[in-house]
Image (cartoon, rainbow, N blue to C red; front, top):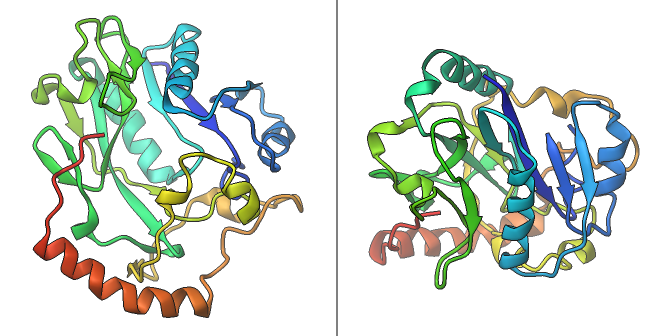
Length: 269
């Protein structure tokens, strides 16, 4: 099976280093980093879009229009995959993928630094009867007709089939849940500077201050973190500072109480 990954980035220089990649107007070193990789399998393009979800959906649709593959992998600039997880997904697609519409995987949402993740109680994604830290990341383009991206009124951007049904709302028996987690940096600073971070219109609300749960000392971080890096690439090993920890120490108990008493309605991405 042929898998193509779609990646849209903007000011992600801390995590973009190591695949149709479209940059939507980065002003930090993101584009420079991607160009420096020099891998023929990476198709890189720079486009200029307005700062709203509709424009982003249009960009994703353009990528779909240029895609000729069996499966689509949705890969954002703040997502870093573990090699074991990729191998597990590849094996599943090659052996059983023809029977499924899509694949959902768990996410390890880093908070403060790469050594800590959000607790299970914070997971509010609702997909095919499952609630937690999950994300739909693979779509079977051969099995589903008319896959397209849209922003219906009152809804967030999503992928739909030709009947207008969201991919995650199709028959749950054809949605595979695979235990193949990836690191999600959505709650961390993603650009090389706070200035550049604030230029991205959807970025500020995603930054979180919380103690989180420390990853086990035996956790195997992605191999790309160990690769030699040019000077323009920040180290992923930077730990949260004392000020962050102190702020997180008083905020975390309040957030735990809020989650227990005022349970949020599940969010369906």
